[in-house]
Amino acid sequence: MNRILAAVFLVLLLQACSKEPDAPALTAVKPVPATVAWVKPEGANIEAIFEQARAASKPVFLYWGAVWCPPCNQIKATVFNRQDFIERSKLFVPVYLDGDTQGAQKLGARFKVRGYPTMILFKPDGTELTRLPGEVEPSQYMEVLNLGLVSGSSVKESLARALGADSASLTPQVWRQLAYYSWDQDEAQLVPPKDRAQTLHKLALACPAAEREASSRLALKAVVAAAQEKVALPQQAAALTRVQQILGDAVLARSNLDVLVNYAPDMLERLTPAGSPARADLKASWIAALDRFAADASLSYADRLSAVSTKVALAKLGQAKSDKPALDAALLAQVRAAVQAADKAASSTYERQSVIPNAADVLTEAGLLDESDAMLKAELPKALSPYYHMLGLAGNARQRGDKAASLDWSEQAWNASKGPATRLQWGGSYVNRLIELSPQDSARIEKAVAGVLTELDAVPETFYERNRRGLEKMGQRLLAWNSKGEHAVVIRKLKAQMDGVCSRLPAQDESRAACAAVFKPHAAVAKT
Image 1: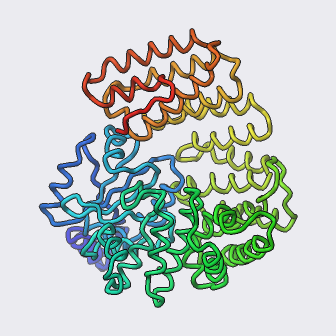
Image 2: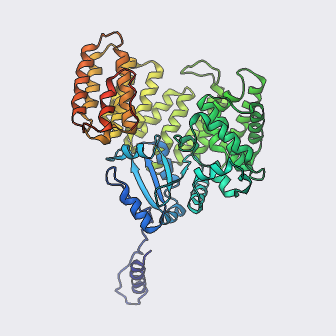
Image 3: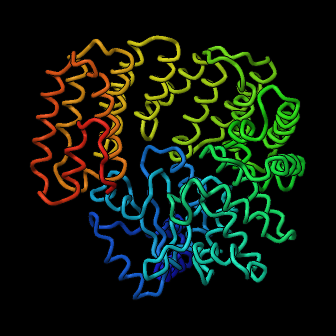
């Protein structure tokens, strides 16, 4: 409560205590809840914000997200509304960058961010300090944020030291900063993707034994990187033993919950051969850890739901793809209970935009398609971004083999979507689904593509980052659809429409080349 409100409240309180018989009844003034004072760039120009940061000697915290994105809404519901985050935000310049705002995609390309959400902490001079992991628990997130704020060096500088001769001199805080860096969203800022597994393995070995949490996290991340990039895993037998030890240690497993939940199938397949006793043992240990998470009342219902979802994924490993996977009755009952609990617990709009799609997805993965549909449809009237839920309904219909319903929901999702980048993404998704499920309907495909291209704003900012990738993907799908020349007339008309957009771009701007390459086969598009 500020001083003016406090003074007003005191006056009102004294009046309320008066013994005057005719004194009116008064209602206490409630303090306005504190919020983060987000700063939003003007278009693609962020220089003024960094000038403000330099003048105030404050770091810059950049959030890159989207209104519809479930993980973004989870961050809003669990981190950005925390009082300690709001207080910390006074120590930096908080920048809110929504992917649908003008210039956002160009800034995304500049800062090398791809997925929503990405959060980066910069020094006042614009040097990147660290990338924060959005998937960890809020308390861990706050610790990582604090480490970044007090650190005298960037993660890049810390990495060089950790891999060098003076690694023994690094403080525990530096090792934790390296361990909790958002390696999955590094975008080759520190190391090329193909070298990430080896780098993380070296860090895990160099990390002091006393730093058990940091060391275990680095070891797990090395396995994840090897699985994602399909590269050799250094000392695979030792890595398997280490993962088994972490799963069996309740404290270490709990601190690495996000890794063990989000990457279990990939890690399991990378560490052990299919059908081997080693895989059976590792899977049993993993399920035991997941059951501990699912029953842990100190975790959010969303995290507990995620643990059950991972159990479903592990149960389906090795099974043929089917809309009715072979799951035992106990696991199905656990799925339903976790979904109901998460649905009941999620109260805020942001939280529900995160929890409901995830809960519906768990039901889908468990083969409970009708229940997944019912959950999504019930949420549509009150959802923050219902068009995201419609994609879930489209996916369920496709899994059933109902092509017409899948296309109908996909089209509805595109029609309902909001924001230029989002509409381009949803429109491209609808086109791709049309080509997949109804390739013979050239009139519908032409109409959909023309609709997407009509909405393109002929400015350079349109042809960056997610927008550019979405257009490239759609263009390549269309060229493959016309591989035998049977749709040449349609492609010529669409290409002419695209050329009209490209012609309005500055002649020497790299965005024009990106625009012109959309309908070129296997185009080597310059990365903008």
